[in-house]
Length: 255
Figure 1 (cartoon, one colour):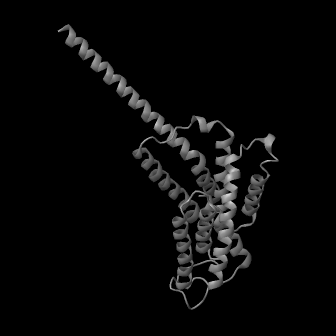
Figure 2: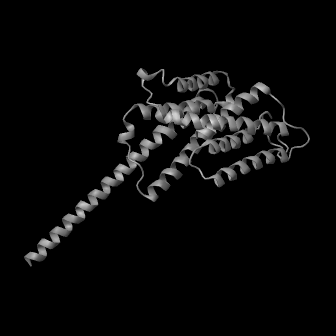
Figure 3: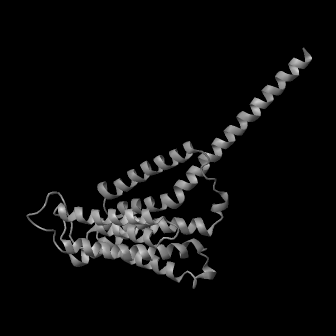
């Protein structure tokens, strides 16, 4: 989510600043809109490749496969006629830089406590928040996704600052994990699609913000509540079955 949100923000801002029209007369995809430089797909794939390359502990073969896929993604954008070669090259280069920054930022975020007393230590994160807020003020409506980044990290900050980490119960079975993944993806898709396609202005901003905070705070809490309820139901069933078994044994002894 961090990779997707940040790469979208970077490509969105640069597209508006550079405002380079897409290639004309070459389009295989005739419904491609927006500007050309840099390629958003190439920047996203470059960010994924850059992040995985600088991420410790990943298999070298996996890193190689992801880099190859990123290059193939960039080639496909030129083949479809929606970008110039320079668009995809800049996208890959910027993406790899963004991926590197996120890989380093991740270490800082994981160690962060978001306490006011440690505000100097969290200067890098505060800088990220400021950049996002500034971007929110200047990016046109089609890039309200910046509000999703803000909501994403606000939710994470609340999670880290409070004792929620100790209170939340994680999924314990494969079924629960599947429900959490599929259900969360479906709800996020509905909220994100509503924000992107069906509304504009303040409502769109609120929905994007909600989709961000949904990922890091709302859905984890919801799943934790559901898992707790399920565990209570199981424990009640076990107690009832034990009582039934004990009562049967007593009757058998009496008989």
